[in-house]
Length: 222
Image 1 (tube, rainbow, N blue to C red):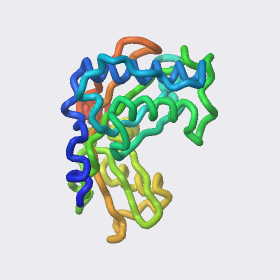
Image 2 (image 1 turned 90 degrees about the vertical axis):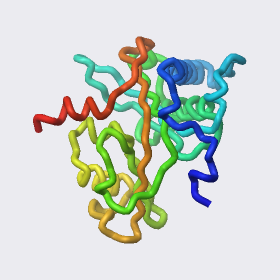
Image 3 (image 1 turned 45 degrees about the vertical axis):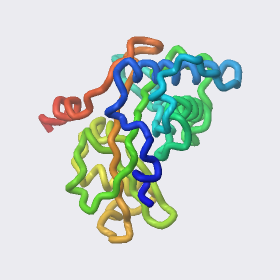
Image 4 (image 1 turned 120 degrees about the vertical axis):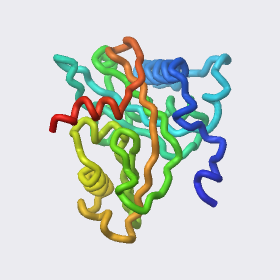
């Protein structure tokens, strides 16, 4: 059975409205702050939109906001399969990004005023046969071969103005494989879509990112 059929009720990112994205990002912020302060998982209110109670996939990224609005990664963890309701997935990913990312020490209470939160709502991954099917700004990728697996979110190649081949090569490296692993027929490549919501400033206005527009604006002159 394909993953699409197995999780046919999973929320697709295109179904998420701006208001729902704002709510999910606010919940991610509250979950992080509550856990960092009290080591407790927040309890959901009773008026959660029914859509957010359906299964869903999400990543939560925490960035430290430096001078001139430069961002420095502080944690990023998520789930590529719908193991829980979308809103619970966001809560779990938020807490994990703050406390369990092996690349960083746990987030401190002092840092809560220095970080911004980004929530990526993902679609189910779909296998592709050629890297030519990948669209920068639309797709995140999963590289899988044997016991090795790694993913890069759709916003990652925009930050570095990567072309498709570089994006896939970096995905191979993320998976612990050689950069040209995608040339091996045993390597499987999956793509997924995302809608991304972010805080402009710590606890500030929450907006939605237009990744394709960002890529065209940022990288067209290179």
